[in-house]
Structures are given as C-alpha cells and as structure tokens.
Length: 133
Image 1: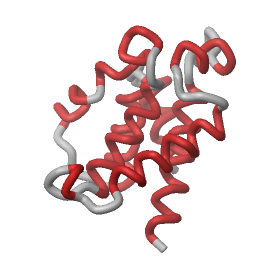
Image 2: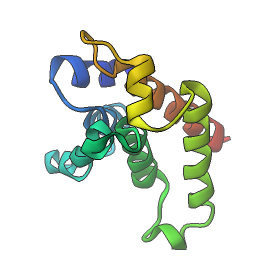
Image 3: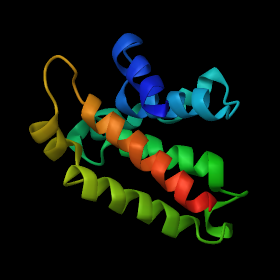
Image 4: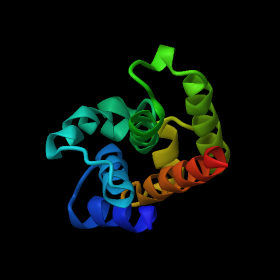
C-alpha cells in the first residue's frame, strides 16, 4: 500500500520523489506529520537538484528517522546502521544510489522516476518489517 500512496503523490499530485515517499509514509503509517513537513525533504528531489543522492532514497531515510530515531541520531543506538542497511538494500535493488545514474537507466518521459520512488518504498517497507521482528 505504501507504493500505491507514493504513486498517487508522485504522478497525480506532481510531488517530487522525496516528497512522495514522505507523504506516502505519513498516509500509510499515520505518522501525524504536519503538511509543512514536506518542506524538509523537498530539496532532495532530483538528487538535490544536481543529480547526487537519489531523492526517493533520501525521503526513505527521512521516514526512517521519523519512525526509528530518538531525540538525536547519534544518541539512538543502531540508527546509523539501519540507515546504511536501507541505503545498501536500495543500491542492490536499483544498481546505484546516484540520481544522475538512476535516471539514465530507470526513468522515462511519461513516469519520470517512478521506478526509483517505488523501489525506495519497497525497500523501506521491507526494512521496517525486518527490524520489527
């Protein structure tokens, strides 16, 4: 269901990749984020506007922070490892983490970077299920 929410935000509401992942998680998991929270990740779209780290992946890491982090990241035991695990899982799924590379391989004119958005959601969902055990 997370992927369906993200697809809606990305294609129907014209959100960017990072915004779509955050908004989808907010809807799916009832995070209670205020509407303005999307502004925290908006700048990560399109690899921070210059093709660097995938915005969908950045959005997923932001969600992980909301769901798993205590008061501070460095005070939350294991949080850094969880972020690294999420990034490595995304990289294994997509063949990289750099927006400029992923767009060349996976994006198209009609659906833009939907494949990366859906992959970020799938990896996030899987990670959350695994770490809940």
